[in-house]
Length: 125
Image (cartoon, rainbow, N blue to C red; front, side):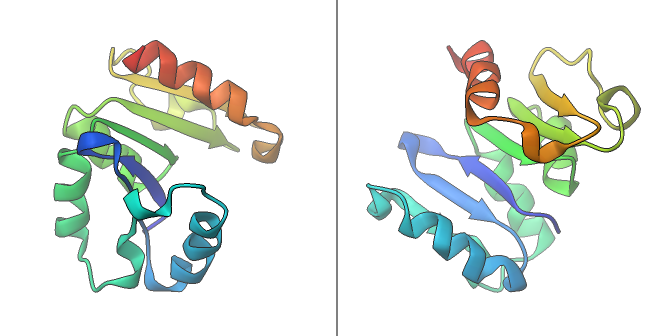
């Protein structure tokens, strides 16, 4: 499963992903100022079904084009996707009112935090 970031109840932040992503997620968390509200689910033996339940209870999901994105959309969770390579119209239901995306088919790394946050604001204001 590709890593996703889940904003959960009471503004806690949870990262879902595979065990091999746990160390990378820890490095992201280490750079945050309020780490006490951040959870790295990739460190546990969380299953896809458990990840689905975490996502289902989220206020917001920020992810790349991945399984977590599709789970979020299917569970009617406000979802912001970061999409590169394949156009969003091919991989996602772009007409879903709870779905926003930032796309750069040529270079996903060119997508900025500001672009993503603009989409977050559109969804949750």
